[in-house]
Length: 139
Image 1 (cartoon, rainbow, N blue to C red):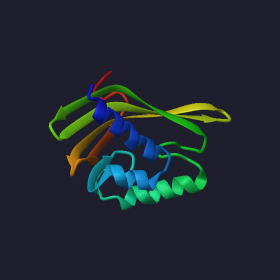
Image 2 (cartoon, helix red, strand yellow):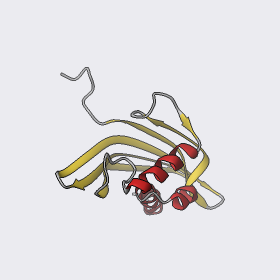
Image 3 (cartoon, rainbow, N blue to C red):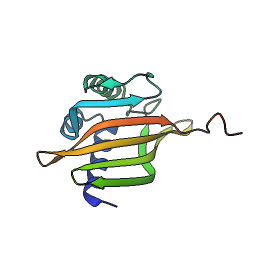
Image 4 (cartoon, helix red, strand yellow):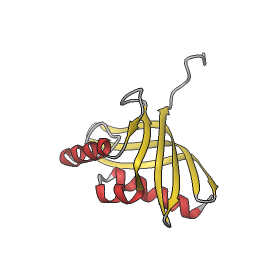
């Protein structure tokens, strides 16, 4: 596994999870494109969408991707990093575990993040998320 890209990816995701907009800007390209299956079936462009979500989550004490506020952690299952020079692709299943008074809930989905090294710094330029459940054709 590529240590440099792995450490960058963890920093990027931690910034999102803690609603750290400065870190999000540091690790994300302004022309970001993404697909988030639970939000809309269409491509989202740019940073303002997530800035709004991160600000709203911070105000209610929640982290990005969690249903409610509570102690949260994230794990990357089946992480694969493919690096081609100054371009890297990370694919994994993201698990966001949240501890609530009623127990622990886990939100799960599959992600791919495309990262490019621009002017010596890694930036996420594209994200694609899909649900992590059995396909309809699987009986």
